[in-house]
View 1 (cartoon, rainbow, N blue to C red):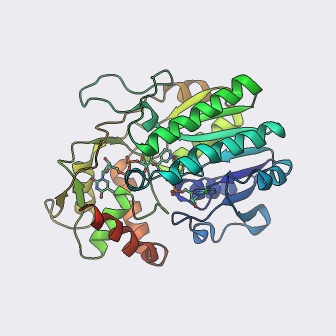
View 2 (cartoon, rainbow, N blue to C red):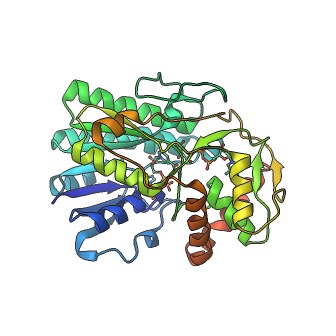
Length: 332
Ligand code: NAD
Ligand code: DAU
């Protein structure tokens, strides 16, 4: 039995990971989360209180980290500013949390010799052409496009340097686009689902040819746990579930699942610098660690997700108006 410090555990993927760990293992969790606009304490409701402790705080607070490190066996760093559109409007919090926050975590982890796992994104590799036969692998050169992805790339490089220079016992995973319960309504899939629930229409950036490689958050969680349990220190693992879909197709599926006509959506202003396509080759994770995704049917996963948002309006309703107000400023 181990104790994990899970940073960003009140966010979308962190809260799914904590639920997954508490339900499938006997590990304990200490959650460190700043509760920014994206953090939601209620995402952790109902989990066993005797195995989870919640602490509100900033990953950039070295003094706090030095108090927490001796209490844990490993750190899993999900804390981040995570939304590309926000990073285009105000990049500063992305530098503060994604770069300086990661710096503080790895500095404290090395002082206390604590195993560290850094959660990152496929966006560090830039984007692919639609017809490129190659997908991202662990050796693809970094080429990030947005303030968000460049700060994530910077954080990955810091972790790599701490491994090489200081012997930090760290691993990194770069995952593709997640979907599932507890995702903030600013993000693509929950935004469209909740627009339709509200009697509005989905909003598609540009022509909607952009491709994302969708993975259910539970599959991301099982992959991260595999890396914590069996991953080799110093290694990077790409996480993906062969889920490529273009945005137009995703909106059309959401509309179909929700019983709306196929064309009932609006084209809106495109995202500046919008990455065209992400696609992950997760062969290393599958062959070396024996990981396999469980959610192979994207449409079925979307149906479950639509139902979750229908059933959990009190969870997302308080954020909806503010998220849409931000989009109004850019005509999106
Ligand atoms: P999210 O925005 O839903 O959650 C982020 C959480 O971090 C929130 O609870 C927030 O309060 C917390 N946080 C922010 N700044 C903090 C700070 N300074 N100190 C402590 N806590 C802080 O994000 P998410 O979508 O769950 O993403 C989690 C991680 O996974 C991020 O590192 C992101 O880059 C990575 N990732 C996300 C996806 C995706 O599809 N969402 C895919 C691959 C990788
Ligand atoms: O690839 C992993 C990344 O996936 C993570 O690192 C990020 O944290 C996560 O937010 C996500 O980034 P994206 O920018 O791909 O996700 P987002 O949900 O913002 O948008 C998905 C796609 O949908 C993207 O091509 C933009 C488009 N989009 C988005 C919104 C919000 C729309 O067409 N309409 C919308 O209303």
